[in-house]
Length: 375
Image 1 (cartoon, rainbow, N blue to C red):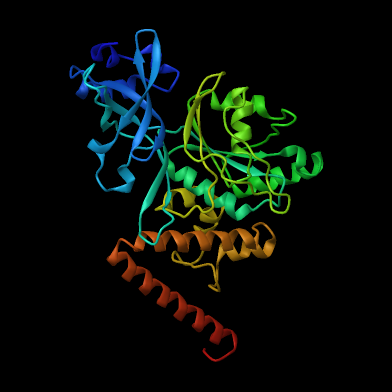
Image 2 (image 1 turned 90 degrees about the vertical axis):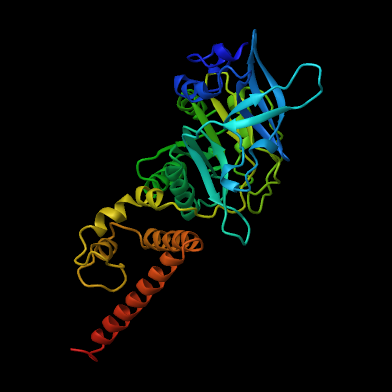
């Protein structure tokens, strides 16, 4: 397939992988140079597997990424990226190379698990962030809120999937867990599925058929089992989870992009031991939209929802309309998000310290006032 046809609207061979007119337009700047568009389906140690078009379909090539290495972890090629691929000259033995990455539409990013202030992009150009949570263990709503916040921030549509529904304690128990999960993820579709019984798989496949999805969650959440069920064959390695905590080994060690038989593609990811917040102000606002709406009714615009008079958030907790747990989760994730952002912003660090001091002073004042020490 010549580069000119690859840059025209929606080359058929790549359509199954998510190629469309928008990406084709982005590729126009590279047309006529002998390059091909390709989607990265796997990353491994400075090289990537990418699918590129050819006359009778697609083929997978191994491409070096040295030409796009910038030292910026946020710009490292990742699974889901659309890339400009140089296949090299036939017969020279030179490896294919990634010449550039096309602009990302969305990117699921977490704080990297290191002492340095760095973000890590787990998947790019994703339409649905599928958060897998096992019902074989106690439902951790705080973790749900963390993943959903990052899902919203990515630009993708979060989708919460409660896996292993057959181990959830029966229909009534699963119904209660679904209700709890919906409370923790307002505006997010929540599905209960079982790869063992097939429950919910058709509904999930119908949602995923419309684009690119990424499977996210802890080890043992059943992501690879779910991927195999959606694919209709055992493609991803699966091992049993431990009985005591539901956790399994990291059977998936790379992020793999797989084509679904019913349409769409899915990126399976290794289990995540930790998911640190990463500049997720907008995502937190959407995940905790109920608290944000209540906060708008507080007497003070900078209410911290601790001891301030006229606090609509505390009033909702007193009425039983808002769980105390949810407010505590909101505070925790906000603090973590502010901290990670402040690590790279000295001015913001100073503002946060000043704000904390003011809130501490107000708290002391309100306590003393309640004790009658102040008028």
